[in-house]
Amino acid sequence: MKLQQLSLFLENRPGRLEAPLSAIAAEGINILTLSLADTAQFGILRLIVRDWEKAKRVLEQAGWVVNLTEVVAVDVLDRPGGLAEALRILEDADLNIEYMYAFSLRRGDKAILIFRFEDPDRAIQVLTEKGLHVVDGEELMSFVP
Image (tube, rainbow, N blue to C red; front, top):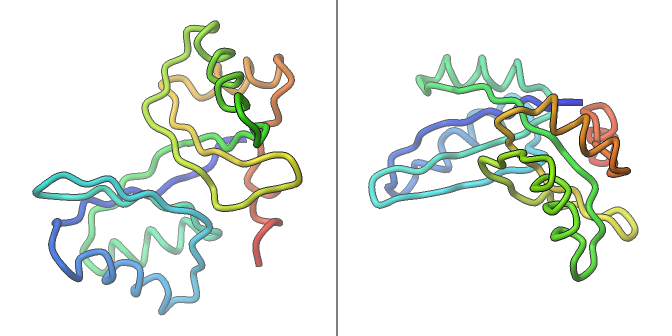
């Protein structure tokens, strides 16, 4: 149920974001979702792609250092308070969220959010026990062409 996320450090200058994205696009790799966090000096690009092994290889061959991280995709009710309810479950279980970002897909009354937890296995167990749907990689990939 965990997903593999690729992370790259990029210098915070014009054109630095386009280069790695063009490299994977040239290999026919589609981005499912991404996040970009920045500071004055650098940015962290986080990607979830269908073929993460190929994307990692392509990026490393082009000279980028790629970090692989396990993240968890969770269905959250897409209404006021939906995210707060999910966060309360995690807080009650004393689970720390390192960061999160939204997947750009909505399914009916649900939105998919990507979470990075200190303990992803325990987070999956707690979320499942509390009735939240953890989206596995195969299911996630079926939503996008």
